[in-house]
Length: 216
Image 1 (cartoon, rainbow, N blue to C red):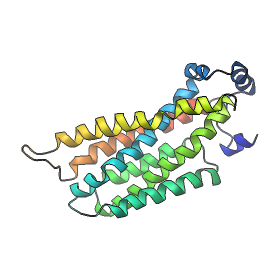
Image 2 (image 1 turned 120 degrees about the vertical axis):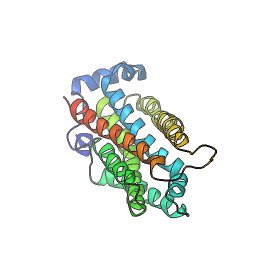
Image 3 (image 1 turned 45 degrees about the horizontal axis):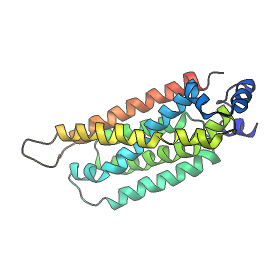
Image 4 (image 1 turned 120 degrees about the horizontal axis):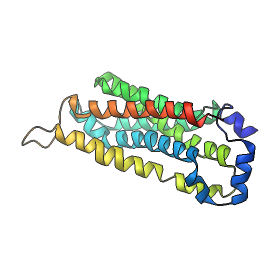
């Protein structure tokens, strides 16, 4: 159908399974469904990656010995807008947001001042695309019965990603690189390991989608 075409013909449970979900009319059904948790984990990772950069872009700029955060916030915002629109226009599948986010984190891990703009932009693209594809993917897998409840459950993903990846992981790594007696971390080591971990997580999510979510 049209939703199948939107997701490039890859994502989707058998029609019989989607009908069963609709007849049950229960959002609790999805909590026992493997594909819901795959979509949820992907959104936790990609959205959490975007929020981590948004929350820490000021510290990233300072750690590289520069000033002026506004330009990089704009790059993230522009990337997010284009990602939201482009994901639907180009009919991307759910595998693309983590691929784009992983590439962006590898760019950022170079700790190059010139790479920061590209890293911010493509992080925004992956972040925005995930918000467009999340409801499309859920509708394709589970149908539209009780869709509001199902989408509502999945929308905990950005909060979970923010807490785990930004508040806990990124903050911990940043703090352990602050020199004794200091208050601010400077140098490429402040965020390099964070970006590499985020890249690895997003690559794992892309493989998870490719192997399990697209499996009929």
